[in-house]
Length: 276
Image (cartoon, rainbow, N blue to C red; front, side, top):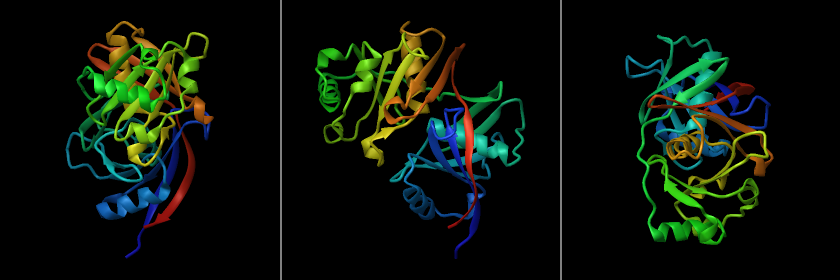
């Protein structure tokens, strides 16, 4: 039986509508089955669609399930900020000073600072990349392997591999071969001293039903751990992403103690009801 649900489309990691990464949010989605969520996420054809539900953990303020057009994700960055923005806009009130989101990976802490949301990145382990994977990354990015200054796996879930380049121009010029990339999730990053931000980032995820992600919280979280941890970035920096797609994504990264905070602005672009 069809039901009506409250709906919003949020532009995440931007203060300028239609210049970030859009997220579809369905509120009060507890009555929906997994199959209905999958079908709706496939229909929106956005990089992610989030469904807000009642939490099952007493420590959480709300629960969210996150879907790409083809699969469910245990965690993702821009849906975390966008879902929180939608929850607050609908009148959500946190139990404590921080907002606590429950998702498949566990509990995620979110804070508001100067009206900007930021999440504490889930813990992860950085891993070295073997020679064969490095060669596959270079081939999939259509670059000589020597153009990649350093490479690292920066997250286990969703499994980002990050390649460091010398210049912003190199990153923006990339024209990936998605067939060669296969199931890999590849992020490209370079310092951007001549730009408005400190780093330029691109994220490629062909196996999730999209080629390039406009702005990616989970990738930038892993990059922050790597870049700050190796002294390639200061403890506070800003990254741009989406430039090659005509977007103006801005991600604000900050290390405080053992926490890595990933922040960005959110803008509500569409509100209404959907029938599912």
